[in-house]
Amino acid sequence: MSTPNPLKNPELESKALLFLVLAATALFALILWPFFGAVCWAIFIAIVFWPMHRRFLHGSHNRPNMAALASLTVILLIVILPFAMLAASITQEASVLVEKMRSGEIQVSTYFQRAVQALPTWAHAMLARFGITDFSLLQQKVLAILGGSGQALTTRVVGIGQVTLDFIVAFFVMLYLLFFLFRDGERLTESVGRAIPLHPQHTRRLLTQFATVVRATVKGNIVVALVQGALGAIAFGVLGLPGAVLWGAVMALLSLLPAVGAAMVWAPVAIYFFFTGEIVKALGLVAWGTLVIGLVDNFLRPILVGKDTRMPDYLILIATLGGIVVFGLNGFVIGPVIAAVFLVSWDMLASVRQQPAAPTGR
Image (cartoon, rainbow, N blue to C red):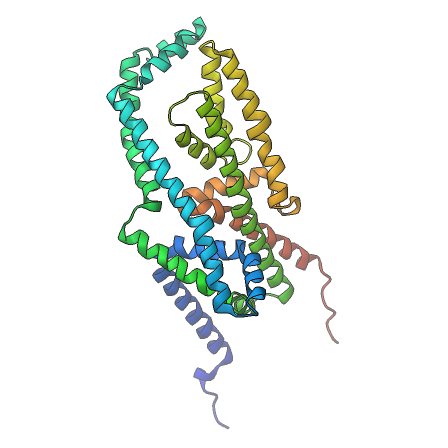
Protein backbone atom coordinates (compact mmCIF):
# COMPACT_ATOMS: atom_id res chain seq x y z
CA MET A 1 0.00 0.00 0.00
CA SER A 2 1.53 3.32 -1.12
CA THR A 3 1.68 6.22 1.32
CA PRO A 4 -0.19 9.40 0.29
CA ASN A 5 1.90 12.31 -0.87
CA PRO A 6 1.62 15.05 1.83
CA LEU A 7 2.23 17.75 -0.77
CA LYS A 8 -0.97 16.74 -2.61
CA ASN A 9 -3.20 17.28 0.39
CA PRO A 10 -6.36 19.15 -0.82
CA GLU A 11 -6.51 21.16 2.40
CA LEU A 12 -2.89 22.23 2.00
CA GLU A 13 -3.49 23.20 -1.62
CA SER A 14 -6.52 25.29 -0.65
CA LYS A 15 -4.60 27.11 2.08
CA ALA A 16 -1.66 27.72 -0.25
CA LEU A 17 -3.99 29.12 -2.92
CA LEU A 18 -5.68 31.39 -0.38
CA PHE A 19 -2.30 32.62 0.87
CA LEU A 20 -1.18 33.27 -2.70
CA VAL A 21 -4.35 35.26 -3.47
CA LEU A 22 -4.03 37.35 -0.28
CA ALA A 23 -0.32 38.03 -0.80
CA ALA A 24 -0.79 38.98 -4.46
CA THR A 25 -3.74 41.22 -3.56
CA ALA A 26 -1.74 42.99 -0.84
CA LEU A 27 1.20 43.59 -3.19
CA PHE A 28 -1.12 44.76 -5.97
CA ALA A 29 -2.80 47.20 -3.55
CA LEU A 30 0.66 48.43 -2.53
CA ILE A 31 1.68 49.31 -6.09
CA LEU A 32 -1.70 50.94 -6.72
CA TRP A 33 -1.56 53.07 -3.56
CA PRO A 34 0.22 56.07 -5.18
CA PHE A 35 -2.73 56.30 -7.59
CA PHE A 36 -5.40 55.51 -5.01
CA GLY A 37 -7.29 58.75 -5.63
CA ALA A 38 -7.11 58.41 -9.41
CA VAL A 39 -8.40 54.83 -9.31
CA CYS A 40 -11.20 55.71 -6.88
CA TRP A 41 -12.42 58.66 -8.93
CA ALA A 42 -12.27 56.67 -12.16
CA ILE A 43 -14.54 54.06 -10.56
CA PHE A 44 -16.85 56.69 -9.04
CA ILE A 45 -17.22 58.64 -12.30
CA ALA A 46 -17.81 55.46 -14.30
CA ILE A 47 -20.60 54.40 -11.95
CA VAL A 48 -22.27 57.82 -11.96
CA PHE A 49 -22.16 58.25 -15.74
CA TRP A 50 -22.85 54.62 -16.62
CA PRO A 51 -26.48 55.31 -17.72
CA MET A 52 -25.18 57.99 -20.11
CA HIS A 53 -22.59 55.56 -21.45
CA ARG A 54 -25.30 52.96 -22.05
CA ARG A 55 -27.16 55.45 -24.25
CA PHE A 56 -23.97 56.20 -26.19
CA LEU A 57 -23.39 52.47 -26.58
CA HIS A 58 -26.87 51.98 -27.96
CA GLY A 59 -26.50 54.98 -30.29
CA SER A 60 -23.18 53.70 -31.65
CA HIS A 61 -24.72 50.28 -32.47
CA ASN A 62 -22.75 48.51 -29.71
CA ARG A 63 -19.31 49.86 -30.61
CA PRO A 64 -17.65 49.95 -27.16
CA ASN A 65 -14.56 51.95 -28.15
CA MET A 66 -16.58 54.72 -29.81
CA ALA A 67 -19.08 54.86 -26.92
CA ALA A 68 -16.30 54.96 -24.30
CA LEU A 69 -14.54 57.79 -26.16
CA ALA A 70 -17.79 59.76 -26.43
CA SER A 71 -18.51 59.33 -22.70
CA LEU A 72 -14.98 60.42 -21.81
CA THR A 73 -15.24 63.52 -24.02
CA VAL A 74 -18.53 64.59 -22.46
CA ILE A 75 -17.13 64.16 -18.93
CA LEU A 76 -14.09 66.27 -19.82
CA LEU A 77 -16.26 69.07 -21.20
CA ILE A 78 -19.07 69.20 -18.62
CA VAL A 79 -17.32 68.08 -15.42
CA ILE A 80 -13.53 68.26 -15.34
CA LEU A 81 -13.01 71.50 -17.30
CA PRO A 82 -15.58 73.54 -15.28
CA PHE A 83 -14.18 72.22 -12.00
CA ALA A 84 -10.64 73.17 -13.04
CA MET A 85 -11.77 76.70 -13.93
CA LEU A 86 -13.67 77.01 -10.64
CA ALA A 87 -10.64 75.82 -8.66
CA ALA A 88 -8.44 78.40 -10.39
CA SER A 89 -10.94 81.17 -9.62
CA ILE A 90 -11.20 80.17 -5.96
CA THR A 91 -7.42 80.03 -5.60
CA GLN A 92 -7.00 83.48 -7.13
CA GLU A 93 -9.69 85.02 -4.91
CA ALA A 94 -8.18 83.43 -1.79
CA SER A 95 -4.78 84.87 -2.64
CA VAL A 96 -6.26 88.35 -3.27
CA LEU A 97 -8.21 88.26 0.01
CA VAL A 98 -5.18 87.28 2.09
CA GLU A 99 -3.06 89.94 0.35
CA LYS A 100 -5.66 92.63 1.12
CA MET A 101 -5.64 91.61 4.77
CA ARG A 102 -1.87 91.73 4.91
CA SER A 103 -1.71 95.17 3.23
CA GLY A 104 -4.33 96.58 5.60
CA GLU A 105 -6.95 97.21 2.93
CA ILE A 106 -9.23 94.86 4.86
CA GLN A 107 -8.98 95.51 8.61
CA VAL A 108 -9.99 92.38 10.48
CA SER A 109 -9.62 94.17 13.81
CA THR A 110 -12.27 96.70 12.75
CA TYR A 111 -14.84 93.96 12.17
CA PHE A 112 -14.03 92.34 15.51
CA GLN A 113 -14.15 95.68 17.32
CA ARG A 114 -17.56 96.56 15.89
CA ALA A 115 -18.94 93.17 16.85
CA VAL A 116 -17.48 93.21 20.35
CA GLN A 117 -18.67 96.75 21.10
CA ALA A 118 -22.24 95.65 20.41
CA LEU A 119 -22.00 92.79 22.92
CA PRO A 120 -23.57 93.05 26.40
CA THR A 121 -21.50 93.74 29.52
CA TRP A 122 -21.23 90.10 30.62
CA ALA A 123 -19.84 89.18 27.20
CA HIS A 124 -17.19 91.94 27.51
CA ALA A 125 -16.16 90.54 30.88
CA MET A 126 -15.86 87.04 29.44
CA LEU A 127 -13.71 88.24 26.55
CA ALA A 128 -11.48 90.15 28.96
CA ARG A 129 -11.09 87.01 31.06
CA PHE A 130 -9.78 85.15 27.99
CA GLY A 131 -7.57 88.09 26.98
CA ILE A 132 -9.44 88.89 23.75
CA THR A 133 -9.39 92.68 24.01
CA ASP A 134 -6.36 93.77 22.00
CA PHE A 135 -7.79 93.88 18.48
CA SER A 136 -4.56 94.77 16.73
CA LEU A 137 -2.85 91.78 18.34
CA LEU A 138 -5.85 89.66 17.43
CA GLN A 139 -5.54 90.78 13.80
CA GLN A 140 -1.86 89.80 13.79
CA LYS A 141 -2.76 86.36 15.10
CA VAL A 142 -5.50 85.96 12.50
CA LEU A 143 -3.13 87.00 9.73
CA ALA A 144 -0.50 84.57 11.00
CA ILE A 145 -3.08 81.77 11.00
CA LEU A 146 -4.31 82.77 7.55
CA GLY A 147 -0.76 82.99 6.31
CA GLY A 148 -0.05 79.40 7.34
CA SER A 149 -3.45 77.85 6.72
CA GLY A 150 -3.99 79.94 3.60
CA GLN A 151 -0.76 78.66 2.15
CA ALA A 152 -1.71 75.09 3.03
CA LEU A 153 -5.22 75.59 1.66
CA THR A 154 -3.85 77.13 -1.52
CA THR A 155 -1.45 74.23 -1.90
CA ARG A 156 -4.28 71.73 -1.53
CA VAL A 157 -6.67 73.60 -3.82
CA VAL A 158 -4.00 74.33 -6.40
CA GLY A 159 -3.08 70.65 -6.22
CA ILE A 160 -6.32 70.00 -8.10
CA GLY A 161 -5.45 72.27 -10.99
CA GLN A 162 -1.73 73.03 -10.66
CA VAL A 163 0.43 71.75 -13.49
CA THR A 164 2.72 69.40 -11.59
CA LEU A 165 4.11 66.06 -12.65
CA ASP A 166 2.23 64.12 -9.96
CA PHE A 167 -1.07 65.70 -10.90
CA ILE A 168 -0.56 65.14 -14.62
CA VAL A 169 0.32 61.49 -14.11
CA ALA A 170 -2.63 60.87 -11.76
CA PHE A 171 -4.99 62.76 -14.06
CA PHE A 172 -4.08 60.73 -17.13
CA VAL A 173 -4.17 57.50 -15.13
CA MET A 174 -7.73 58.38 -14.14
CA LEU A 175 -8.75 59.18 -17.74
CA TYR A 176 -7.01 56.08 -19.10
CA LEU A 177 -8.66 53.82 -16.53
CA LEU A 178 -12.01 55.54 -17.01
CA PHE A 179 -11.95 54.75 -20.73
CA PHE A 180 -11.45 51.04 -20.07
CA LEU A 181 -14.01 51.00 -17.29
CA PHE A 182 -16.56 52.32 -19.77
CA ARG A 183 -15.45 49.92 -22.49
CA ASP A 184 -15.16 46.76 -20.35
CA GLY A 185 -17.36 47.70 -17.40
CA GLU A 186 -19.92 44.92 -17.70
CA ARG A 187 -17.28 42.23 -18.14
CA LEU A 188 -15.25 43.55 -15.20
CA THR A 189 -18.36 43.61 -12.99
CA GLU A 190 -19.15 40.00 -13.88
CA SER A 191 -15.56 38.98 -13.14
CA VAL A 192 -15.65 40.68 -9.75
CA GLY A 193 -19.00 39.07 -8.98
CA ARG A 194 -17.66 35.60 -9.79
CA ALA A 195 -14.54 36.16 -7.69
CA ILE A 196 -16.34 37.29 -4.52
CA PRO A 197 -16.79 34.16 -2.36
CA LEU A 198 -20.42 34.87 -1.47
CA HIS A 199 -23.78 33.50 -2.48
CA PRO A 200 -24.75 34.99 -5.88
CA GLN A 201 -27.78 36.68 -4.32
CA HIS A 202 -25.60 38.35 -1.68
CA THR A 203 -23.01 39.34 -4.28
CA ARG A 204 -25.63 41.05 -6.46
CA ARG A 205 -27.02 42.89 -3.46
CA LEU A 206 -23.57 44.02 -2.34
CA LEU A 207 -22.55 45.32 -5.79
CA THR A 208 -25.94 46.99 -6.29
CA GLN A 209 -25.72 48.76 -2.94
CA PHE A 210 -22.16 49.84 -3.68
CA ALA A 211 -23.18 51.41 -6.99
CA THR A 212 -26.29 52.99 -5.44
CA VAL A 213 -24.37 54.67 -2.62
CA VAL A 214 -21.65 55.93 -4.97
CA ARG A 215 -24.26 57.50 -7.25
CA ALA A 216 -26.14 58.94 -4.29
CA THR A 217 -23.02 60.43 -2.73
CA VAL A 218 -21.35 61.79 -5.85
CA LYS A 219 -24.40 62.89 -7.82
CA GLY A 220 -26.53 64.03 -4.89
CA ASN A 221 -24.00 65.50 -2.47
CA ILE A 222 -21.83 67.29 -5.03
CA VAL A 223 -24.74 68.85 -6.92
CA VAL A 224 -26.44 69.94 -3.69
CA ALA A 225 -23.16 71.33 -2.35
CA LEU A 226 -22.51 73.29 -5.55
CA VAL A 227 -26.01 74.76 -5.55
CA GLN A 228 -25.79 75.73 -1.87
CA GLY A 229 -22.34 77.22 -2.38
CA ALA A 230 -23.54 79.25 -5.38
CA LEU A 231 -26.55 80.54 -3.44
CA GLY A 232 -24.30 81.48 -0.53
CA ALA A 233 -21.86 83.29 -2.83
CA ILE A 234 -24.76 85.23 -4.37
CA ALA A 235 -25.99 86.27 -0.92
CA PHE A 236 -22.53 87.36 0.23
CA GLY A 237 -21.99 89.26 -3.02
CA VAL A 238 -25.28 91.14 -2.64
CA LEU A 239 -24.37 92.01 0.96
CA GLY A 240 -21.03 93.38 -0.21
CA LEU A 241 -18.83 90.93 1.70
CA PRO A 242 -15.27 90.48 0.36
CA GLY A 243 -14.33 87.10 -1.09
CA ALA A 244 -17.88 86.00 -1.90
CA VAL A 245 -16.74 83.26 -4.30
CA LEU A 246 -14.24 81.96 -1.75
CA TRP A 247 -16.83 81.82 1.03
CA GLY A 248 -19.25 80.19 -1.37
CA ALA A 249 -16.65 77.49 -2.01
CA VAL A 250 -16.18 76.99 1.73
CA MET A 251 -19.95 76.73 2.10
CA ALA A 252 -20.09 74.17 -0.70
CA LEU A 253 -17.37 72.11 0.96
CA LEU A 254 -19.09 72.21 4.34
CA SER A 255 -22.42 71.40 2.68
CA LEU A 256 -21.12 67.86 2.25
CA LEU A 257 -21.88 67.48 5.96
CA PRO A 258 -25.63 66.99 6.42
CA ALA A 259 -27.70 69.23 8.71
CA VAL A 260 -24.82 71.46 9.91
CA GLY A 261 -22.91 72.26 6.71
CA ALA A 262 -23.80 75.56 5.06
CA ALA A 263 -25.06 77.16 8.27
CA MET A 264 -21.52 77.04 9.67
CA VAL A 265 -20.65 79.85 7.23
CA TRP A 266 -23.70 82.07 6.88
CA ALA A 267 -24.92 81.85 10.51
CA PRO A 268 -21.84 83.58 12.07
CA VAL A 269 -22.12 86.33 9.43
CA ALA A 270 -25.79 86.82 10.28
CA ILE A 271 -24.91 87.00 13.99
CA TYR A 272 -22.24 89.61 13.20
CA PHE A 273 -24.76 91.73 11.30
CA PHE A 274 -27.21 91.42 14.19
CA PHE A 275 -24.74 92.55 16.86
CA THR A 276 -23.44 95.44 14.74
CA GLY A 277 -26.96 96.82 14.31
CA GLU A 278 -27.49 95.87 10.65
CA ILE A 279 -30.76 94.12 11.42
CA VAL A 280 -32.09 94.16 7.86
CA LYS A 281 -29.00 92.38 6.53
CA ALA A 282 -29.10 89.91 9.42
CA LEU A 283 -32.76 89.04 8.91
CA GLY A 284 -32.32 88.87 5.15
CA LEU A 285 -29.36 86.50 5.43
CA VAL A 286 -31.19 84.31 7.97
CA ALA A 287 -34.24 84.13 5.71
CA TRP A 288 -32.10 83.33 2.66
CA GLY A 289 -30.07 80.75 4.58
CA THR A 290 -33.02 78.91 6.10
CA LEU A 291 -35.66 79.24 3.37
CA VAL A 292 -33.47 78.96 0.26
CA ILE A 293 -30.08 77.42 1.08
CA GLY A 294 -31.42 75.15 3.82
CA LEU A 295 -34.33 73.82 1.77
CA VAL A 296 -32.20 73.00 -1.27
CA ASP A 297 -31.12 69.76 0.37
CA ASN A 298 -34.70 68.70 1.08
CA PHE A 299 -35.84 69.62 -2.43
CA LEU A 300 -32.98 68.53 -4.69
CA ARG A 301 -31.62 65.44 -2.96
CA PRO A 302 -34.80 63.31 -3.32
CA ILE A 303 -34.91 64.24 -7.02
CA LEU A 304 -31.24 63.45 -7.66
CA VAL A 305 -30.83 60.48 -5.34
CA GLY A 306 -34.19 59.06 -4.36
CA LYS A 307 -35.52 58.73 -0.85
CA ASP A 308 -35.01 54.97 -0.67
CA THR A 309 -31.21 55.26 -1.09
CA ARG A 310 -30.57 57.57 1.84
CA MET A 311 -28.90 56.45 5.02
CA PRO A 312 -29.63 58.19 8.33
CA ASP A 313 -28.14 61.68 8.49
CA TYR A 314 -26.18 60.93 11.65
CA LEU A 315 -24.54 57.93 9.97
CA ILE A 316 -23.70 59.94 6.86
CA LEU A 317 -22.20 62.71 9.03
CA ILE A 318 -19.98 60.33 11.01
CA ALA A 319 -18.99 58.31 7.95
CA THR A 320 -18.18 61.45 5.94
CA LEU A 321 -16.06 63.02 8.68
CA GLY A 322 -14.25 59.76 9.38
CA GLY A 323 -13.68 59.15 5.69
CA ILE A 324 -12.19 62.62 5.18
CA VAL A 325 -9.88 62.15 8.18
CA VAL A 326 -8.64 58.76 6.95
CA PHE A 327 -8.70 59.16 3.15
CA GLY A 328 -8.55 62.93 2.65
CA LEU A 329 -10.90 64.57 0.15
CA ASN A 330 -11.72 61.19 -1.39
CA GLY A 331 -13.21 60.15 1.95
CA PHE A 332 -16.45 62.07 1.47
CA VAL A 333 -17.40 59.28 -0.98
CA ILE A 334 -15.42 56.38 0.48
CA GLY A 335 -16.74 56.93 4.02
CA PRO A 336 -20.46 56.58 3.17
CA VAL A 337 -19.68 53.64 0.86
CA ILE A 338 -17.89 51.81 3.67
CA ALA A 339 -20.80 52.56 6.00
CA ALA A 340 -23.28 51.22 3.44
CA VAL A 341 -21.25 48.02 2.92
CA PHE A 342 -21.06 47.64 6.70
CA LEU A 343 -24.85 47.86 7.03
CA VAL A 344 -25.50 45.54 4.10
CA SER A 345 -23.00 42.91 5.26
CA TRP A 346 -24.46 42.78 8.77
CA ASP A 347 -27.98 42.69 7.38
CA MET A 348 -27.05 39.76 5.12
CA LEU A 349 -25.45 37.97 8.08
CA ALA A 350 -28.58 38.50 10.17
CA SER A 351 -30.82 37.17 7.38
CA VAL A 352 -28.64 34.07 6.94
CA ARG A 353 -28.67 33.37 10.68
CA GLN A 354 -32.46 33.60 10.75
CA GLN A 355 -32.83 30.98 8.04
CA PRO A 356 -33.75 27.51 9.35
CA ALA A 357 -30.92 25.03 9.35
CA ALA A 358 -31.00 22.37 6.66
CA PRO A 359 -32.14 18.96 7.97
CA THR A 360 -29.35 16.47 8.41
CA GLY A 361 -29.69 13.05 6.82
CA ARG A 362 -29.85 9.96 8.98
